View 1 (cartoon, rainbow, N blue to C red):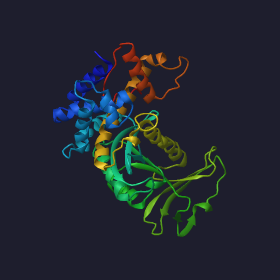
View 2 (cartoon, rainbow, N blue to C red):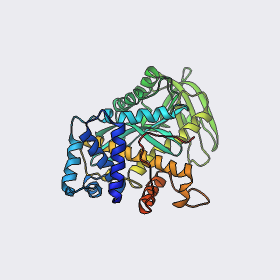
View 3 (cartoon, helix red, strand yellow):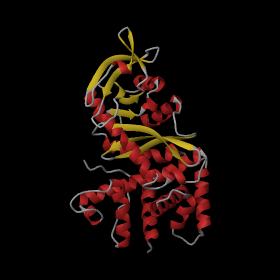
Length: 358
């Protein structure tokens, strides 16, 4: 059996077990797409089609996948939700640290992504794709993607939401405070006006030295001061300037410790793009089609992260990395182990249900 056939057969079998309520023809196409992405390391339909086994011509397989991403009856949330919910349930014994950020995908489109941080990686949960360029988007889109995540969370889960300066909008944070019990840490602009007591200040009024932390409690943000929260001022030893964090956490050190984990979402985008699947070169431009392509790319990513964790838990990472330390990321270990296993005719697990190793 060829390597492509081995991968496709196992992916299809696993998906059929986990997506029993979905049209089985759609499941077959999704298995093709995941196989194509992992084997080619390219989330481009024309390239993916070359890695799918079978007698059909590459062009026929490409057209089948193209019809899939165009199909209005393939609902992104309905298809991906079972995997996202299981992932959160598997991690719910610890606080769920969520991060949100945006990145370019396809031609002239952006994705706003929210995921949960686990070890050194972010695992995708929900997204919104829209026409636009890199830069600030609307608070309505922020709330839209957070509402998707809210429906996935296990009851009573302890949640901390992290975001960069783009996500410090009063409207979004007011929604978080009114509709959830989440904690949050959001970076904000140093030019923001704040009210402390009856007095208005700029961030420059609170000068720190490198290495210092300060917390100001019950601060009013914006001209109307209608968003009460705390302000953590943190000048990390390696930073050129202090950063300012809006939070409802009680102290500055805790806020800084959580905020440092936000950068995991940037490694996710790197894995989906230049270090992994090159989804920014998908050649798709329609937001709905890109959103459906992300189903396959995100499932492929969860599988590769799980496979990387498998190599670490079994010691097999030493066959594809240094024996005295781990240099490769969890994601890269997964990709390299699949390649090694296929080359040496070894067994490899396929699993889209996440199994953490604490």
